[in-house]
Length: 116
Length: 114
Image (tube, rainbow over all chains, first blue to last red; front, side, top):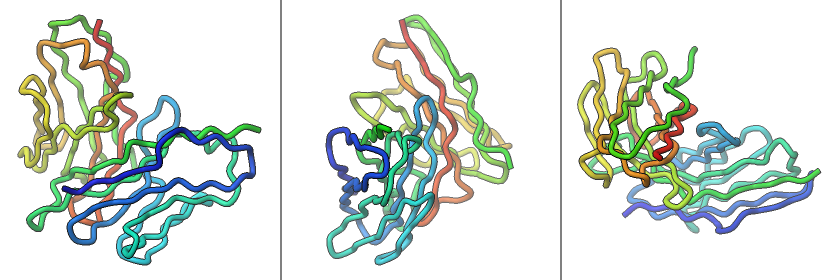
């Protein structure tokens, strides 16, 4: 079945460091791919999305490119800030029989901590 | 445009009790999905409603149920609460569902079962 795998373990960086969070997926067809962010005590916010192969989603300095050949959608940011400390989730919609019934499959989440 | 609103934000219940959580989607959104988030299991899909019909259900026991009203507002109910039901319950709404449709999440209801 469709699945998403994120890099394991928390990530700790100093401010202005480069960030990469790896995400690989298994999917039927070519669904959109999403990155969601969850700040402490909050729900999930859509960070960026890509709808087809080679698409690059970007928002707030974050970028991710939909790579069909490597089935990856890695999240990157050139210079992180303390305010980026949060949990990041890679996700894809369930797509079966020509219909997506509103279900998102999420990776396990990556905790990012940025120190001043 | 108002976002997804979940009420209440926090709940404390006793084992064996039942609980009802509410979700008001973004105006015009007809699809509402529910997720359970726990440290051990991560984000797990509970069910999805579209135009008052449940179209998809996750792998949860029958104690977990839901419904959607004609104004797209949704409720989920958990009966005979267990300690393991303690979690953050998230509701998400979408205008429609498809391969390219993103979901918008509420802030969640934090349920603690004691």
